[in-house]
Each structure stands twice: as C-alpha cells, then as structure tokens.
Amino acid sequence: MNHIGFIGASGLMGHGMAKNLLAKGFAVSLTVHHRRGPLQDLLDAGAKLVEHHADLTACDAVIICVTGTPQVESALEGKHGLLSQARKGLIVVDASTSEPESTRRLAGRCKELGMTLVDAPLARSPVEAEAGMLNTMVGAAPDVFTQLEPVFKAYCENVFHVGEIGAAHVIKLLNNFLGQAITTAAAEAFAVGTKAGIDVSQLVRVVSAGAVNSGLFQAMAKTLEGDYTGLKFELNNASKDLRYYVHLTENVKAPSLMGTSVHQSLVTACALGYGQELVPSLVKAQAQINQIKIGKDR
Figure 1: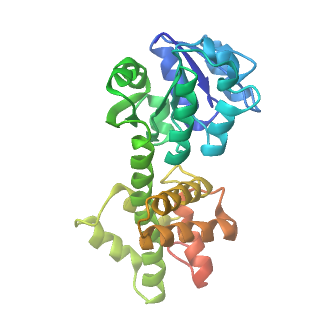
Figure 2: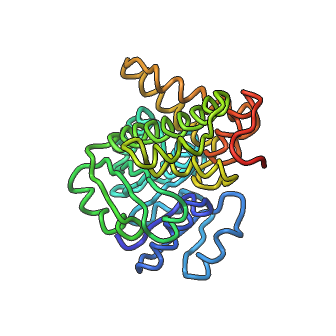
C-alpha cells in the first residue's frame, strides 16, 4: 500500500486526509471535481493529478471521500468511474457517510470484477482531518483491514475494525443519530426555556455539572453567547445523514420515533434557510419557529 488514489481531496475532510498521506510518505494521485484551487498545495507537495476516476485504478488502493451515496455510486459506476477500468486486486475505501444497502450492493459489484470495497467512514471534524487526528470505523475482512491499517493511521488517531463490509456505515449512522439527537434536543430546550421565562444560561450551568453534559451540548451552549461555529458540520449534511439513518430503520423494520423526529427537526431548519449554516444554527431555527430571541441578540 504505497500508492493511494483519492477522490474528494478538494473537500474539507478529504484535503486533510490527502495532506497527511503525503506527509507520511505515501504517493498520492488525485482527481479534481470542479475546483483545482483547493488541491494546489497537495500538488505542490507531490500529489499527481489524473483526468478520470478510472485512471486511479493503477493505484494500490483508492479512497473515496465525497458527500454521500449518489456521489460514491458515480465514482464507481459512472462513465469514467473506477468500475469502468476495473483492476483485479484493487481495494476501494469508501470514507464517505453512505447508505449500508448501497455499500453492500457496490461491494458485490466490485467482487465480481476482482476488486474489494471497504467502508471506512470518519468521525471528528476538518480541523482533526488537517491534523491527522480523525477517527475511522472500518468494515472489512480481517486480512484486508491489516493491509489498510497503515493507510488509516496516516490520517487517523483512532482506527476501529468494527466488522465486515457495511458494518462501519451502520455504526456511523447510529453515531450521527445519537449526536444529532443531542443537538436538536439542546436547541429545543433553549427555546422552551426561553418561552417559559427562565435564564437559559442557568440551564447550561446545571447541565455542565452533571451527567447530561457533553461536548456537543457545550457547542450548542455557545450559541447563547452568539457563537454558532462550535460544530463544523453543515445542517444540509446532518439532514442527509439522518435521512440515511431513517432509511436504515425502515430496511431493518425497526420503529424510529426518535430518529424520525430528529430528522424532521433538521429538515425544518434547512427549509427555513439554514441548510448551508452549521449545526448550531438549529437554535436560530427554533427562535424563528417560536418567534423569540434565544441568548444574545445577534
């Protein structure tokens, strides 16, 4: 595993991953989506630019880090996708947040052509990506995981082998559901507390001293001081991830009262125009819905 292909290096997460692969001595080849600008420092550091995704099949492994399932499917199955020039023995790593059902289907297609698909979605933020301190969960056969572990360690602090193909994307969706349940609950609590006439900062004091406290809650609490940057994750992406989670619950026939509610809270915030803002803007959405001011007047 010396030569790594990368699809999605112009993204906030992908850039840091590719940068750290180069820094750890891997040869890296890239494709460009729309903008070459964000890749320039990677090219200056020695990365090679190729024209089509299919050209990356000469690499030892290819990492895909894109928005979600449609983009992953395009990277593999598109006109110039990886499968159009399949090479026996190639390992493809989907580091995106994708739908497990699609992941398993794509894994089957890869296997038919002698390739291996691995799901290895990420946790943490672009800040940790640039620092090489991401977390990843990996769905792969043990021997494949062993091959890839040095690659993962180039851009991750913690690497978790969680099972066979598809397992990592399931765990990622569960992780994101739990996280967004906290953020949406915090935003709602701030709105209800404000309408009930209390000083919501006193709620933060109480929660901060007890078992309900968390880093996510503290990021949401910063909104009371006018800081909406505590979580570097767009509401559009959060809504997409919860949509995938709800699809998962439907596929396994598990009731999802909480998941559906969290998803609709995110959809509502996006519908109100906050989709391109960060997750803490859930508080802005709650203020608009309830026609109140929450925390400091912005």
